[in-house]
Amino acid sequence: MSTEFLDALRAAIGAEHVLTEGDLSGYEQDWRKRWHGKALAVARPADTGQVAAVVRLCARHGVALVPQGGNTGLVGGGVPDPSGRSLLLSLRRMNRVRAFDTANLTVTVDAGCVLQALQEAVAAQGLLFPLSLGAEGSATIGGNLATNAGGTQVLRYGNARELCLGLEVVTAQGEVWDGLSGLRKDNTGYDLRDLFIGSEGTLGVITGATLKLFPRPAAVTTALAACASMEQAVELLKAARAKLGAGLTGFEVMGRFALDLVKRHFPELPQPLPSAAWTVLLEQSDEESESHAQVRFEALLAAALEDGLIEDAAVAQSQAQSNAMWHLRESITLAQAQEGLNIKHDVALPVSSIPAYCAQADAALHAAFPGARIVNFGHLGDGNLHYNVQVPEGGDGAAFLRDHEAEVNRIVFDAVQSFGGSFSAEHGIGALKREELEQRKSPVALGLMRAIKQALDPQGLLNPGRVL
Ligand code: FAD
Ligand code: 2HG
Ligand code: ZN
Image 1 (cartoon, helix red, strand yellow):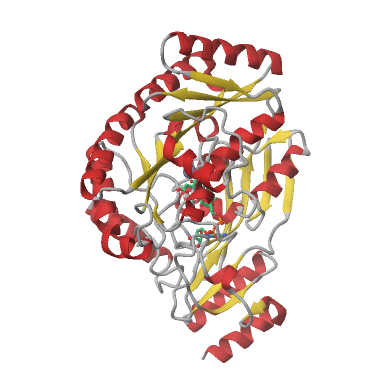
Image 2 (cartoon, helix red, strand yellow):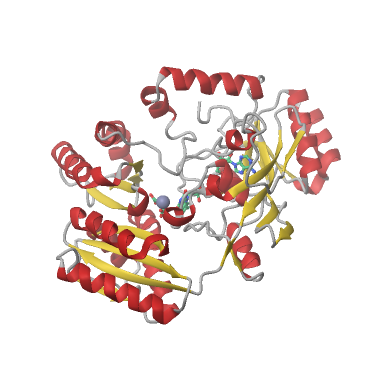
């Protein structure tokens, strides 16, 4: 069967774009190196028509397929299982910017466009595509939409869902749904676009998207502030919102241990506030000018200092300093990877509950696992923490994960649930959080999700074993 299938695949997209030999680890292993899969083959179609042809072949031969963009996902959703029976469908060759409509403030792109390449193409038009995340040099628009990615600009611009006006999708049957509309308003029945966004490759293959663009702000300024406690960081957010309004475009928090790990693995990165218990990174976008932005920032920080919300602050005086501040923030994930095995939690909470959540979860974890190191950082402005756990210093990481990962997760997610939070804010479910979904989502919600999956993919060939 598989020879016949592979021959048909080669005929459909060209033999050189069907990979079965050589080092395929870039497709078969995830970014964190936690999942090591094996694909029947890697198919690299060139356009939507070829994607549809591949999906039709899969449907005819009963072959499961795993869509993949940049393979930067953090929940094991974009790599094949180890069976060697599913097809890895890589969208990376589909990387064209199809069309700008600058009057409508939209751009239409192929799903395999790399996010950073799109940001740059949009900037060349004098406009802004605000989605921004640490993996933007490799992550694709299709992957961003399939996971409903968040990142560092959600506070002002929303997550990937809010930035998408239209989609083009190849269905499980290999039909093309052309929903590439740039309309801001369209209440003509069920919202199919929103069904596919965040579906992690389980309902259809996203092949194109029409995205919202924005005018570029006149100035973007960055500052770091030192807070003695998470309570103060939350109070600072309140003050920044009140003083900067929609001008506040980023509000990230970094715990001391997260930055100590960065210092250990990237000692060359400047840390202007080396003893802060919590470092907040604030970003402001200003419609007037750089000097106007600096004045507003300095007024906000001076008042915060006077009110005891912060202990110290550093305002970036140049683009290079601003880049260095962001680089510090984006390096935490890399420092954690260098440090060794860890357990990631991407949780959402009402901002008002975050200090109490941290106190409760920290105490429960330290009581259960003395020496466990909590790497707490994230998008505080969105109520989204990456509340990660690094195994005890010098401990056997693999043994710790094998013996304790489930209990660590239970402690963290029980605390999250007790504050009305979510166990997955922006990374999705993938393979990693299926059990959590099963246990913590309501039976009614799960029933509806299964009915949708059954209706759209009755053969169960799209990314099986992921999400549901
Ligand atoms: P992949 O990893 O290739 O795939 C992810 C999922 O989407 C899989 O389930 C896959 O099957 C599906 N998929 C991919 N393309 C398609 C398609 N065309 N059609 C249908 N399904 C598809 N995420 C955030 O939300 N915020 C962050 O701040 C953030 N920072 C990160 C920083 C680092 C260093 C890293 C490594 C990751 C980060 N991520 C973040 C996670 C990840 O980058 C995002 O989830 C990203 O959107 C995934 O895009 P991708 O193209 O790499 O998708
Ligand atoms: C970030 O915000 C990413 O940097 C990655 O979502 C988070 O490494 C993590 O846990
Ligand atoms: Zn994040």
